[in-house]
Amino acid sequence: MAPVFLIAAVLGVSPIGLWQTGEGVNSGKVEITACGQALCGLLVDGAALRGRPLKNLKVLDALAGGPPVWTGAAYDPKWGMLVKGVQLRLVSPNAMTVKGCVGVFCHTDTFERVR
Image (cartoon, rainbow, N blue to C red; front, side, top):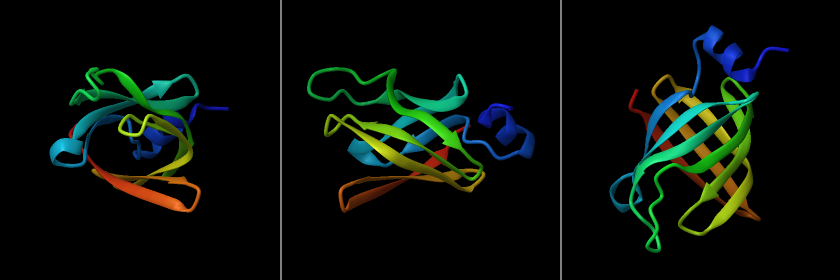
């Protein structure tokens, strides 16, 4: 069975690359890459939080499925919480949403492709 990132690349639809998250104090850049048979995302540019730098922190992990939807886990450094069942959805070649829920409370962020 071919890895999910290889299938996505062949179809021309892939979240692999550098993405801008949010605006202002909540902004940062996440680099999505292949991690074995799945995808993961490292925070490559973002503010420090609670006195510790967040650079190279894995914020997306074990993303499988796609295209256009991958499901996995996300770490929210603001809350110090790992959220499972997160959905990453490509809505266009240069935009994606990342949705996570804790109980009945859900939040969706929109990321824009940098490269």
